[in-house]
Image (cartoon, rainbow, N blue to C red):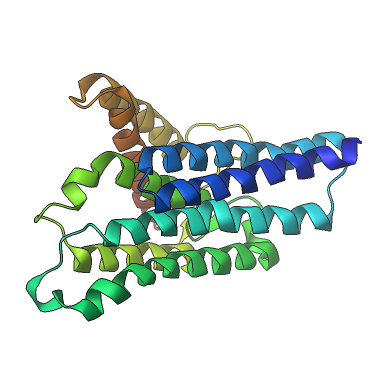
Length: 247
């Protein structure tokens, strides 16, 4: 029985992704984000369970990638798809062609997420860190942003062109050759200073979001989560250009 436990946890991740996708199509952004987070929780523990039980195998690796593709690729794409149907369009894009076509460009994010996961499975360089943005971080960013900042995203200050270009940026981040840090093993200063700085600032942003937001704790936490993912990308890029400290 124990050999099936990690795969059951992975399937829970997949089911969360399916529910998140369903919620996104029905404009349930907060529910979609909640299930993306729950999927990330299961994704974090399936590999640990497999190693702890000594039942790691190729089946689990492949199943994990398939589940991640749904939860961290299709689900955030569905949120962007729905957002394209409500976002403002600039005057030069105010035609039936753009209204009908632009929402489907959201699934570029799912395609690049699948490419990112496939590259990760065969890239021997990513045992201690990441090359390109991890799909869970990408999904959490979009889930947090859309669920907490919808009013701003559909306002005249933002528009479909900005959304499209912003999405393309994250498609590139998923498959780029930029090293991004991972939290594996114990942290020590100064070797892991960027990671520690990130964790401290993330806690600060989450607390500020929770206690200073006028829209409630959950909205504030979601905005803090989106900001922390943005910070993660920036600090990872900065760290890639800094000399590495010796252990």
